[in-house]
Image 1 (cartoon, rainbow, N blue to C red):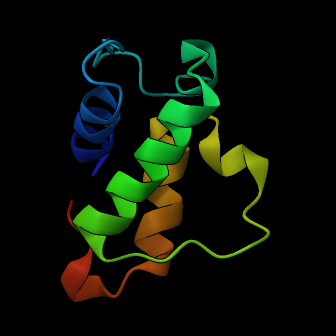
Image 2 (image 1 turned 30 degrees about the vertical axis):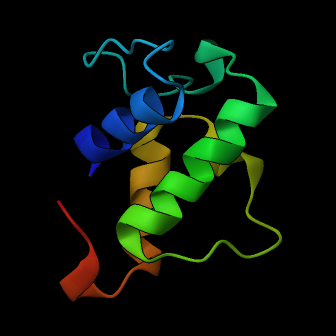
Amino acid sequence: MVELLVRLLEEASGHSVVIDRRDVGPGSIRRLRVSSSIMVAYLVAIEDELSFVWEDGVAPEVFDSFEALAEFLHRRLPRAEAPR
């Protein structure tokens, strides 16, 4: 799931964001300082790829790192749909 999330962010940014795949832990998304337009494109890419619908009130900590985001999505997606 982490690798998928990394790839989706790179694609959503038009490959203007290049991510060190060894840096996916605490603060890894926050440190990238992506623009709001890239972040929106990223959230839409996650929706499209995983058939996931974002709800209001997702805690900001979810978007701190790729690992935190992957864990959040694993808890929300049906087991059959959650990539590893």
